[in-house]
Image 1 (tube, one colour):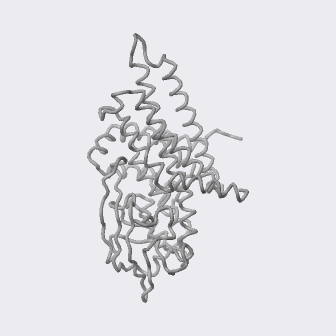
Image 2 (cartoon, rainbow, N blue to C red):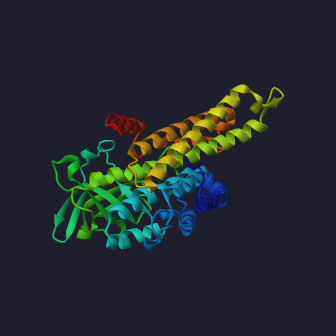
Image 3 (tube, rainbow, N blue to C red):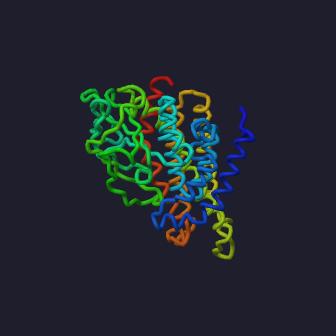
Length: 382
């Protein structure tokens, strides 16, 4: 068992860390307060190859592995969780399915512009009545000559307000439940009948847009179909495995930011004539935070390694996402507690970490669903 990183992986991590510290962290509070999309930061992430990190260079990506993706995403998310989720969705939920299930022609047309960072991508699955139960979706796609006609609305779509392209799940055969779901790659800027709906006001990740995508007799070409009709549910499950590795990485970054700030504060804040870091109650909180974050990172790196080695990693990804997001939330809550009144004020970034951490327990499968996924794998003997 080798825990050493390759030279390339170390380089990716160190590059991401420097970029996050110098370019992202100084503006993260402003981006959050103004609900401002970090366009210039995304442009620079593209130059680093981080918006299509595991996509081959042939299709505009960085040509790196998923372990490198995890290492980079932790560092970016530690500085700004909103930027982290923009990067995660672009890589895991858009680039991955187009890369895995698209034809060569589709990759050139729909993948290369996004993996290179020229445009952003998003993933349209969730609906008002279909979140944890995707088989309940109502969005439909009906063939009409050389086109598909899509009708329906997608909710809570990360990057939806800033994306040029989206992978959209729709029913192509009603009455067949999840077996009737298909996936389409849609050029949102050039699709008649598409419109951007509500952009949500949220508790956290405020520099990341969360939007509604509306399709009203929207027409897309025949070649927008990803794979074959009815393949969508299987494609979605595989995509979400990688997406959960991304969200686990985002959560670890948030948790590490909370730990570092709590540690620094505890060393300098004095009560009863000495730093609060000398009090056992504070030391135990810091020790628990550090231990759980290390465990979360190991779970996440294992899932990424399995993905790199083409191993089934559904259970590993669910474990990583569930544990890392719960750990991030706990770390942020304890961080606020260590800072006391200052932790509750916007003068310090700790309250932002707590707001940002919560969503990691919800999106890309709630942690209740993660436990079901893990249990199902255990019961099947996997």
